[in-house]
Image (cartoon, rainbow, N blue to C red):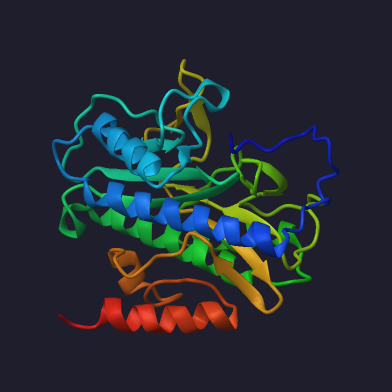
Length: 306
């Protein structure tokens, strides 16, 4: 559920190391989640309901031999989360029609062959030109702090240091980072160690090591970072009604860096925050040698003029 756990059967620094065969299953789950997220994103337009997006997500997940992890998870009633405008996270798809200029996070998790792949991305309803200036700035800052944090990951570093990278970047840009929800370890279990806090902290979350799989998923707000919980016990919105943005990848630590198991593929869209980023131009797939090689090929294809 993305909430930091105060009580766990494991000490917070005890983190599962995935075996090679488990990593391959996670790659497959991550690829499925990416394909479904891209498919859902292509449907974002004025007039569509998030219920319809949820139907598309459900059918696409089942078609790939998987199951949508959110469905019935602690009684969550839908197959994905759709968080629009002031919704920070865990928005439940409904019959409201999207309007031009809305911003929406679509959060997809696919359970495939016993393992979860979890990712989310922002979309502007009506396309890049429909976003107002403040929303563009929010989306860019959220994406950039996320890429900075992911690029920090490598064996031997402390998980707790991820948060300061995120908070320092967005604070300088005039935004705030949510402290009530976090990234998490993932594998055969949806949410496990480590807890990834998206703000400066000294929590003992352990050291990074090859074979660890987890998410980084900062939630960044235009205004204050406090939240209100709706009566459905899932939908978290900003207290002041300001907009919020979020991105998420499932990550794998390798001996020489990190790679996104839910990274973009040949058919993925390039968003303006990827194109315009001063932190990392183009699609980010990781820092390992293998990830950089795939990234260079992909960006040559996706960023080349038509």
